[in-house]
Image 1 (cartoon, helix red, strand yellow):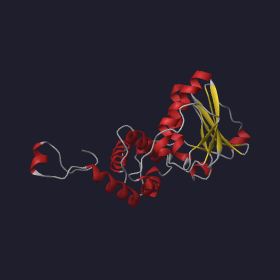
Image 2 (cartoon, rainbow, N blue to C red):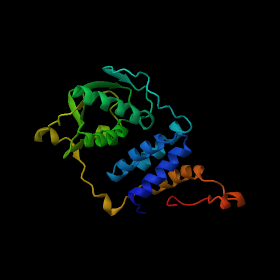
Image 3 (tube, one colour):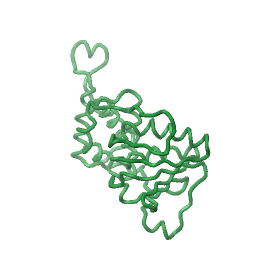
Length: 224
């Protein structure tokens, strides 16, 4: 079944609220999942896989408010810590025109990509390198993502952020996947995963009662 981007975002946002994400954090996480789904990177399915790990276990607090050259994520999900962390790094990128950070124990690096993509609008460009090999490049006209990032198989890497756009030559680009998807045709998430996420979203609905009807509340679908 096909859904609009808005339907996917709304269902995901309500699901994160049902998982215990606070206001604001649920919206950031829903953006990550919706962006991945829009670019055919199975955001809804990935959320269905990780839901037990993050259920009622939200912790988005950064361990250190000072810029260091190493960040150990301790396998905490980037759905929780990613938005605040990337905002923090974006601030220092603009301040210094560029930074380089070593990430350790990042269990789901793919969830960082939508946040890095959003930073491009601020003229902050990014590149991920692991073992001297380029794994991602995000610029105004180029988005390259290596399969290891798509499959969350790159736990340790170097993230380069710069106010100058990175260049990638044709030989390097052969190993990467250019994302060029038209989301106007609708999104088609895995249906069983969609149903699981919808069940999480239903946690946030007010049970229908005489009192709730008087207040205009009650159960409904993701388009209410």
